[in-house]
Length: 171
Image (cartoon, rainbow, N blue to C red; front, side):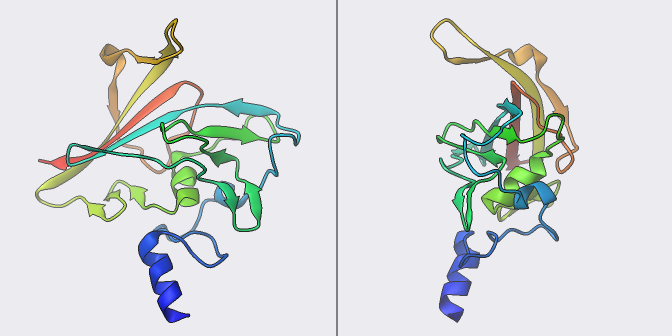
């Protein structure tokens, strides 16, 4: 059992418990279970998160938040590895912070860094916000002139068509 628990911590997974993460406490939304797509969803929108670590893109896996322990679907989840987060809520007006998605995924993310990559004298962790639209070929289009740096990592509220870039890099 010790080996499985240790491996769960290393892999960001656990034995039926909420996934491992480095947050002191999981956000309440990360513990919600909304059942499935057929249940009464009052609000459904899609922010996109892109992560790079030392110049390499980090893929957010498909099915984060789906079939998670005894829950078939968390309110923040993915269906594909393109960074699109499906935010689905049984009530309108729920303010979901980005932090809650990372709690569901089981990855550390705050001003100190992403996963095991931490800010130090040689590295920084930055967040940029933008919006996206779709072109005639249904491809995501981001206007780079609208990109702005923000620093409210844990409290950033997710919104529809929000394009979030998280960048861990050398200074």
